[in-house]
Image (cartoon, rainbow, N blue to C red; front, side, top):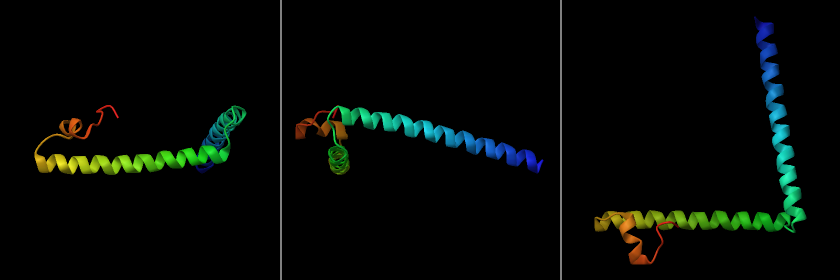
Length: 89
């Protein structure tokens, strides 16, 4: 049984390795495509960093709206027009 278990474990590991290699290849192709479209790695990293910062700021805003809604006894959705916010944002 131990030999079979080790074989199954090795097969599983080989499958995992193969899936990771395939994922790496797909990502490499996507990177190559973006570079061929004129994007640079530094530019993409900067863009991702800015998106993270935007999301952090938006999360804080949502938290503050939630706390204000509780204080006023209304829903967060009801506060959106008061602050000229779009519900779909």
